[in-house]
Amino acid sequence: MRKVLITGDFDIPVDAFPQDFELIHIRRPRDLQQIIDALPDVEDYILGGPEYLSASVINAARDLENLVVMGTGTSSFVDVDYATERGIRIFNTPNFNVEAVVEFTLAMMTVCTARVFESIVGVKQGRQWLQTPRPSISGLKIGIVGLGAIGKALARQLKQRGCEQVCYWSRSRDLQLEASLDLEFKSLASLVSHVDIVCIHITYSAQTHALFDYLLLDRLAPGAMIFNLSNPKIICPVALRQFLVTRPDAFCLIDGYYHEWIDNKGEADDPYVLLSLPVRNLVVTSHLAAQEQNVVAEIFAQAAARVCQLAAQEVAL
Image 1: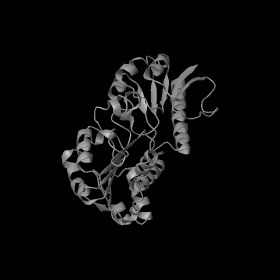
Image 2: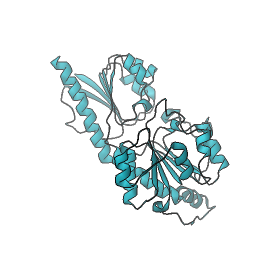
Image 3: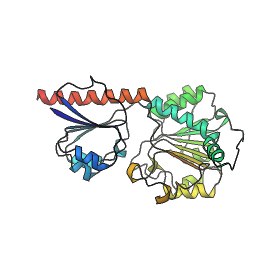
Image 4: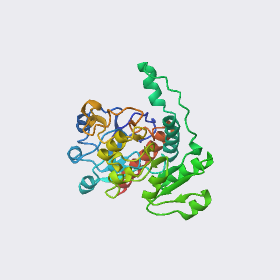
């Protein structure tokens, strides 16, 4: 029997694997120890949960051969260098989450410009009955940072919704898309100086770590809004706090946090002192952007197929 560990809060179809596979499904891992206890004789691992596989966790996986991350941000969930050094083959599941992330981004832009979270808190506390008119998204200047599959899809959706003032920055230009969408390319410094909303959809790497630092954030307008749907570490947390504290009308949404899952102790024990900021300035969600039911099912199907393919190749050898 080939043993497969699967994490993630979703159902597994009965026909996802052949009968000679033994499945261990941890829907909602309570802590890393629960995963470590399951790892010693696991050969394949489909990572769809919130965990991060550090070197110490990987060391418990003595028989692990294949790791498939459900999503694209592999480095956010795995110590890639150490896993590779251990000879573990690593795969991800690209391109399935594009429409889900774009849908989530657009929804959050509407919700946050309407100050919905602030309204909820005001009603619950009985301190405020907010009815400030919200701006139309189509009338705002929107900048997209990163023009991968998600950035391109977002640009198309914004244009379809009548947004005329859309610009982007990417490490490489797409002249064809610029022409077809009347999309303007700007330097990063120029983009943040120009827009009302910044949408971050760039891949996290050593080159993009703390890309948004004091100097870049200082270029933003006093009431600018940031939507970071990439790795939180693309924004320097210390610089972000200063930006939000000194600009009471500014706002940032991050889908994820600098400390996540079991490492997140909430605002009472937050070394960055960001989580204690009011929701009018900061909203943090728990990697919800790609968690659309059909998308998760498609991603898992691809991950399962990859594991079965790899197992079949090994049998053939």
